[in-house]
Image 1 (tube, rainbow, N blue to C red):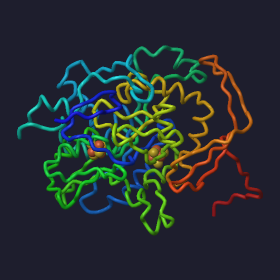
Image 2: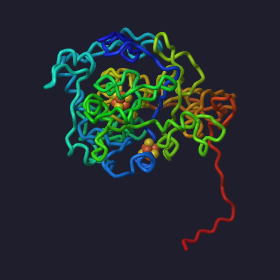
Image 3: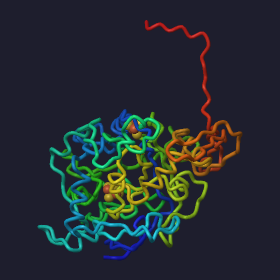
Image 4: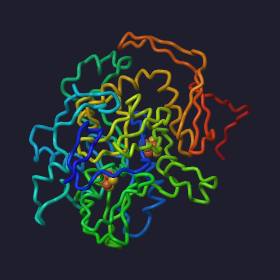
Length: 431
Ligand code: SF4
Ligand code: SF4
């Protein structure tokens, strides 16, 4: 295996292919705190790409209820168990080695799906990534345990769920949250690593990971290797399929939906009524493979500067390009195992956002076009309060945030205080 640099792990790791990086990378940030599990994203994807015969159980985008839900069921627990079996008790982070936005979470000292595979031989010999094929039953119920809360977490102090909880609320004693999932178009895709036909490729222009339907022979090695379980086998065609990141929209080449040629966000993103999703393209430093400094790209800002967007299970080692603002009410140990050691800092920043973060969050779902750059014009202070949990002062400014598309044209201008419109002379009647 070659050695590649994984900035999320803060170190080099083994991967079957040499480093080679795209110019831009498809990436997204989801604010879990706002999701209402309406599944509009899920249906937007389904009605666009997976509505045909043989795709009945195929949900490229799904929203599952954590901790019990999962599509396929148990995907996360089974994946984590494979790491544990390969390297018992050693999946830990050294947070003393945190270093700005180069090593934002410290150094992961455990094993990845690629490193664990070096010790494992399957029935057919050496495997390239630890994995397993889910059963038909596990794929059957995408929404299993929806809205089912966990039993009260042990050790949560009473002040967090007792009479004062409404004003403090660091964690809820019974809890659940929604996890929105699609292919992460990983920097080091396990699906690509495992494919014996070299049918999977990562596009140099935008980092989107695709399966060549002509080359695929349906061996399902990608289904087995992807720790997020996002490639799916189609019985009618006998080949595997996965999220294609709505690439005609990202390219800006669809004459009907992007007549001016500027990239627009995917179907699942633009349909989001909860305004939790923002997707974009980040520039990649082709030498290091890390994100090139692009301070005013909203995705770069949320992940690398504000550090509120965190990768999902970075310990798998694929360097996923989906990022999540963790839910503030769920137990921290659960969140840390899911999003790594950046959880506490991310929640602290999100619950009391500074001026810039509050303004940038206003860009989420403000436009269908991909925002490549933002600018903030300062406005007056409109509110201040004292946070009862920390005793710190928090101030709100009515700044204006402006978003620009790839060609530098202004596409959105929005104030922090959301305007309210009252329609005059409305007389309701249900007929
Ligand atoms: S999430 Fe899975 S299918 Fe998507 S690129 Fe990563 S390894 Fe491949
Ligand atoms: S559309 Fe948005 S709010 Fe609704 S389930 Fe999907 S991510 Fe959540």
